[in-house]
Length: 123
Image 1 (tube, one colour):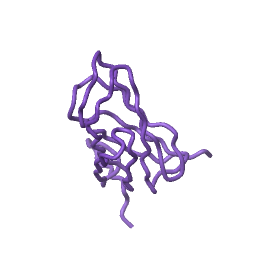
Image 2 (spheres, helix red, strand yellow):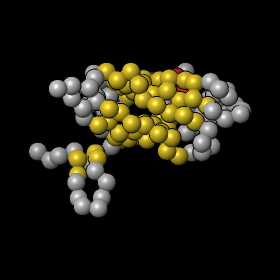
Image 3 (spheres, helix red, strand yellow):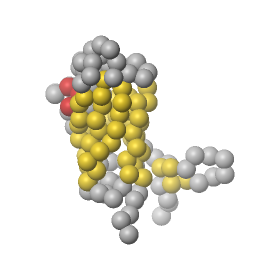
Image 4 (tube, helix red, strand yellow):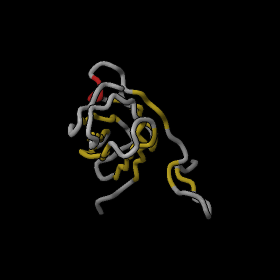
């Protein structure tokens, strides 16, 4: 069985495969997505997010366990430095991402988030 991780001297270590998904325009930036991959990119809806407001959505992912660590960042598209992004509420089969608009104005941008799920253990 091939490993989902690659380790070569001088190269990054992490998942060797990933996926992409785009939020459906049903509930705007709060719309949940499904992406069953160890890493990937999520393109958010372009609905407005007012200054100082945050929004959370659920990522359904069958590879994630409650003991895992999920790292997420604002990868591309939109205004650099205008968003704080964090993964939280990690559970078996899902996690949430919270995006905060820390700019001085309302933004209507379809930002792209990069994430990676790292295997963890409690013992």
